[in-house]
Length: 279
Image 1 (cartoon, helix red, strand yellow):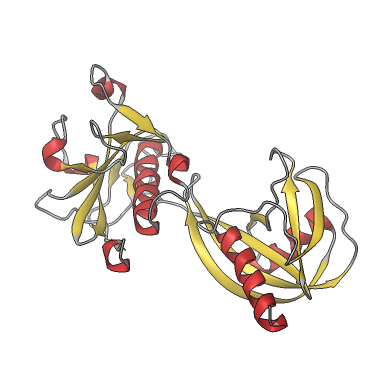
Image 2 (cartoon, one colour; image 1 turned 90 degrees about the vertical axis):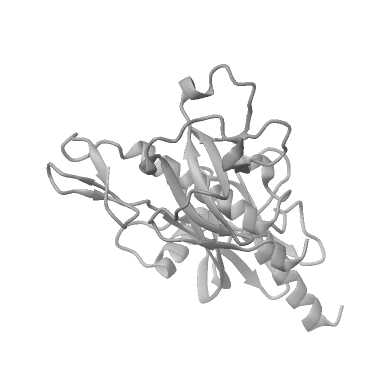
């Protein structure tokens, strides 16, 4: 696939008409496959459901020049049809980045639409705001927008070594960079220093922003940094972290795939070490 064959451009909240193009059909947190297909992309002509209301289909943007929409179906609409569903996690590392972001956006938008049908403040029914990606309560005026949870990721480095950890919920010998959610009232940088201290007991020097990545499981935005080691010995919290060690770039354990921000961070660190050392 050429780079020009994998372009996903996010569109605004207004429904682009006519309703023609590609549709990502969701059922809860699952993606619905068209008959005989291995990817959850439908054409409007394929859809076996009648779309009666514009607010039930969500404009997502353009994928490779075609308009894209999300449509969620319920159990009654799914019943009697010989269709199969698949979780987005099944596509990790197996599809292009643009398509993965399109599918993740579809799941996040339909989840927001479904979970905010009623106002969390007063319980009244909400309606879509005209021209915005938001649901509003006419009774109390509260508005609900799709939300992201910012999550920092830190690869702590010490010369030719990086610190990798194994989560208590992971099986086997899989290791990755440290990560954690940003708490209310703190900056991204403060969250990074706090998480590293809480999880492994290390103090950090300078922080170097690397990249970010949408991670729709269900709605995180991963923000990655390289972090210079400053002081301290590794003391794992035994709550989230089972073990953590310094690893030389030539002797790494099993790490995440390059499709993830963690995998990209670690591989970039290795490439920089090899360049610096003339490997």
